[in-house]
Length: 460
Image (tube, rainbow, N blue to C red; front, side):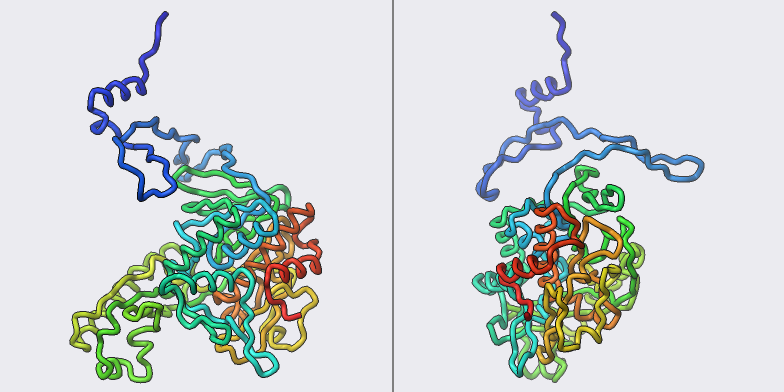
């Protein structure tokens, strides 16, 4: 009987002879609940991943991408695209409501610009009602903040009567990880949502790109929490696009070593601009950079601004160090995420205007409440319609790309509002998946009851 000697057989023989480390390029890591405790092993060769489809090719001066069948990576009830504060809250809320839930995130952590962009200040946690400050960020969002407060140097200025706390990014990432684990959310990090999967006019899932190539994740309901509205735009939903300031945040170290006299000379009353805002670490400050108004969807613009901002930050810190005459002050780090504030805005079944948000009456379909940036004006109602596309089914949105008028962008894009709208979208998606209905047809009173049971504040 004849047998065929394969490449795998060759690799096994070479490995047994002691040549494995020479020819192997990949190893399978030892499985362990605690990766730090895993013992290093000899590199083990495996069959390389083959290209599952023909590559794009040039034809007549055009680049042609052949049609291909995408493998289905996962199927679920609710799929959340984007793991920022809105996407995180949506995933936890949906899972706690009993829906099989998955979340895809392009970076290796949750939090978006909150953690990866070092925008550490949670603005609009409170508002003023009947002459008193009340907390509007409750439910999933406030539970997260409370958990961060239990971690060593996790949060600053967090208390029932204190507005706008500042978090440590690593503590917040950790707490988000733990809450998604506990809720049994299927987590797919390092996955970029690049297209929508359509079934007629219904969104049936999302195409994701990763090191494993393109795959599809199918779902009964998708929540677009990408911030840029990547999924609803790909699906063809009506939307608008705006230009906004694009900045980059950095952190300074050893700020506490600059003496008070020198600190006052550097900034005076504006020392926050010079040396940044406080963090839970006494020696560390975070410094915001607003940047020019530009197109946050243009890759060349983003590339240029990223490099220009880093140059500007480096020169600025060097100038401060010279003025302070103290080499102890240093640039700790620059945020790995560029500060894109706003790009696409959904055209929803309702577009909430600034004027509506400042009226005292609430909408009958209120599902979240926005706060005041300084905690000094009334809470404002967020109706369900801002999450629902006008003409598209199978999808909800949450976070900074909700359907609002131009004057309300500055309030809707804040972390507090992202947490509350994300909570609402996740709960609504779970009900739509459970009842087999379109998101636009969700029983709003039932949704309001669910949100209240999950601790959300609706002001009603």
